[in-house]
Length: 147
Image (cartoon, rainbow, N blue to C red; front, side, top):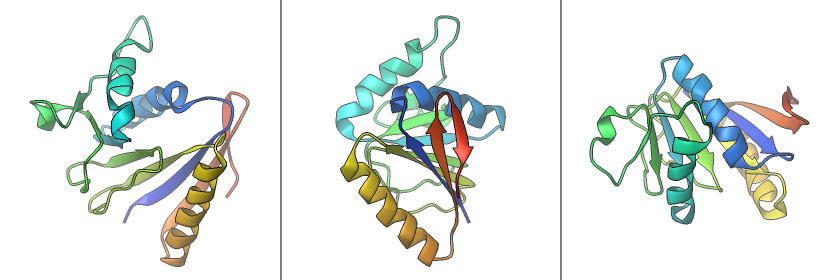
């Protein structure tokens, strides 16, 4: 059963936060699925290659060849997380089948009232279902666990 961690981004956009979280995921030896809206797929793909001068995050898109060999997979269409230990949900996206997932990280755009409201609804549904959930709020450059 997956743990759900809600990350409320208030000071930084997801592009600034996601690479670091993905690096930590890879350090654990986990494979990660990042589900995001189609209109952000190319920009995130490009960003993960160039976000830091001295390194990049090895990754691929699920609409390209060799996806099975990638430690991080970007997708706008995945409905199952089979084969991944970590799932990152960006822009309100969802994955229907979370079988085998250790941790699901829900990235909340704190600058959007609509996104925050949707995350609260998702939190309540998961809590009512008895899932293990926690809430992390961005305070300056660090994360504080609030719940």
